Image (cartoon, rainbow over all chains, first blue to last red; front, top):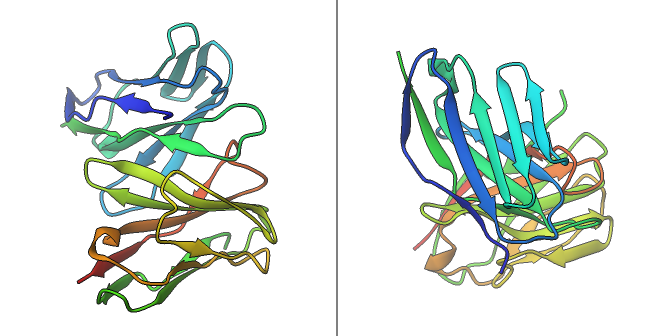
Amino acid sequence: QKEVEQNSGPLSVPEGAIASLNCTYSDRGSQSFFWYRQYSGKSPELIMFIYSNGDKEDGRFTAQLNKASQYVSLLIRDSQPSDSATYLCASDSGAGSYQLTFGKGTKLSVIP
Amino acid sequence: EAQVTQNPRYLITVTGKKLTVTCSQNMNHEYMSWYRQDPGLGLRQIYYSMNVEVTDKGDVPEGYKVSRKEKRNFPLILESPSPNQTSLYFCASSISGSTDTQYFGPGTRLTVL
């Protein structure tokens, strides 16, 4: 059974701080990893994806992937109250796969 | 406006009464998928479709059916709904697969009494 594990939180950080969200996955065949943001009562939206080991930066967001440790993380710099949401980590099932497995999500609260 | 639409947005029904939740996308996407989201269980994939007439099971397909007769539409059918299918359902689409950006519909909150 493929699993994606996340700490459910809530994770509270003060405005302007760095928020660090973590995720581990069980399927060593997974190649693509995604971070979706879901505001309360809304649908998920993609904010970052990463395929290669190392860091990938996009504005205030940095995704980190370590395939040896089967670990994915998302850093949010200069956190804003508008970043308060649930963050979902997801992985595919390998090359050519059409399935996506999501973690249960980490709820982030940015305190003004 | 590029979007994924779902109907109905809210539905309360009774056990055993067949229902269909529609999903439509206007982005000419090949890939479409259905998920359910439950507290404590997260988002789980029910079925997905790689193209017209091509569908496959996700992680929790029991009790659901789908069809993909047209590229833009991917309805979810509950032939005999049961209370354990009470959930928030999301349809999503992407250009060609799960590794492309998936665009989610607004969700359908289903209650089965």
